[in-house]
Image (cartoon, rainbow, N blue to C red; front, side, top):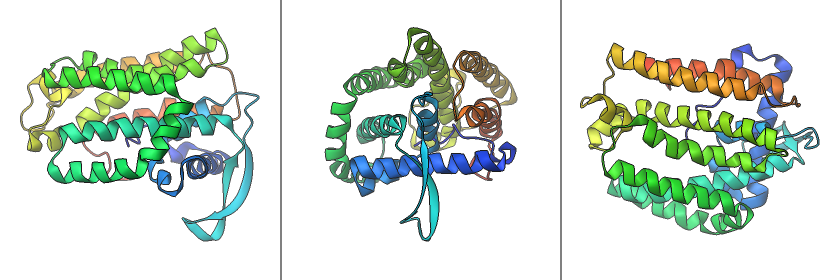
Length: 288
């Protein structure tokens, strides 16, 4: 769906790289087991990060080797028996469903047709996920509705619009084991959510300009051609750096776990690299 929250793979140790792939495949397998084959298409890096982040000392992830549809001839290692992966699967179904609903109002006829088709396929899965994560479902529905109202009003405030999306991700902190962990997780996820929204707006500038669609960054700077000036980039870099610093400070307050080294890479190396590439317009044109 977004995919901005990922590690800088070149800086991972071999063992860490294998563990990250196992987490990614583990979430894919969990989606299939809980919501059926087609739910695997919801798999992304952002919710793999969430599954690792929500894992606690007691929430140990075992590893198994099995074949799958993506690798029918060679067994892959993947994470199994982790409640945090089940929770991440539930949340990804809920968020994807509401994002599709948003597509029905925003995009062109072809995109709306595809969204309706996927909604039909995803309908049963969403009903299950909504029951398993009712509070998160309510938070997503409410904040996306408020975000939609801001977009329809043509809000020129990046802070105001990104806040609504950030609150969605921050709502996951309610699953923390203690109040101290909840506060740290709220700040961490809020500021990562804020970065995701702003990066997505920057990345969509040219596409939104062509379609005449709302874009918070374009409204903030009065951009009509989808191009950022150097001054715009510096200002965006400042606000993104602020959220990155707040997220890293909150991360340091969390306890250690089996995924800590990979999460550290994502927060201190992966997201900053993605931010740099999005700002420079090179994101998606090469692998990180």
